[in-house]
Length: 364
Image 1 (cartoon, rainbow, N blue to C red):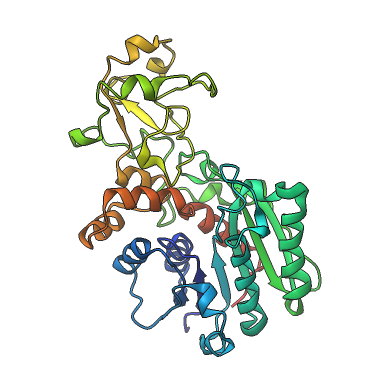
Image 2 (cartoon, rainbow, N blue to C red):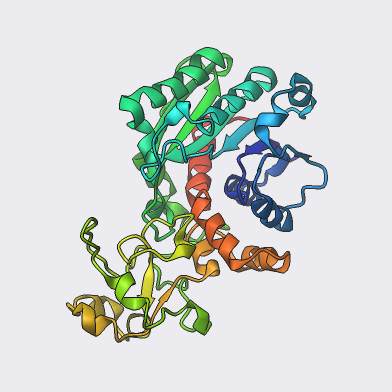
């Protein structure tokens, strides 16, 4: 029996979180994964991407705004079943100025619509920050739905998914949108994060995914290079609960990591980023260790380190080979941290795909 092929286009690809999930899902389910093209404007992310995927027969879109300015370019794309992408979140992020569609970066969303109007793939799977649902009193979210449904002709459903529910110990809540071309179904579908979570619990150990119960489950290394340890000078700042204008409880040694950020290389306080002590990592009973109420001045005497780039990538579902390939291609640790912070979580996308295929919401 001939294998079926899932042809897909990855926009705003970053390091290929959607692609990695699609590849792994197809491998596990006797399907062929065929990426017809990808867009990414960051040159270092592109190096990481091309060092891990064979892109030789694919359309390298590059700057999507420039590419979609020509209808000829869009028409030249091979046909595909699924369009995926984590469209730029800077315009909607709680950390940003929240200008939404007034921000030119937010307008890149409409370049997705440009492609949908011409290529008309069956399915669309998009990701963005959770705050997009409430931005501008909900108007941004409504405009996204309206554009997909009214302008492009799709039924759309969405929900907030937490990475920690899918075998990656990181609290990371993101909105996923799934859209189906209206001529393929009679009624809108429903994408519910709890239902997806319940439908994938039994998959433990039966997929190609890397899964971890917490950061101590073969995710964090017991021994790392000295360069990852905090200096005596920086430790008080990292452990500080804040300043006069900013107060927040700083805690290290989180079993479920805080959300990775693209700026983690800058080393924020321990209320924003992830730091771990040797005392915790090497303790015979880490859970018992966490019950201690260690004073900050005592904690500052411990050897404390930040995540390594490999550990950050693991928290997003990528493996050691992926990190090694990027490093060999000349990508710096600085860029790897940024790429991990910007990435879509592989396990979350895989779980959504598993649910959609099993419910026949995606058919090839």
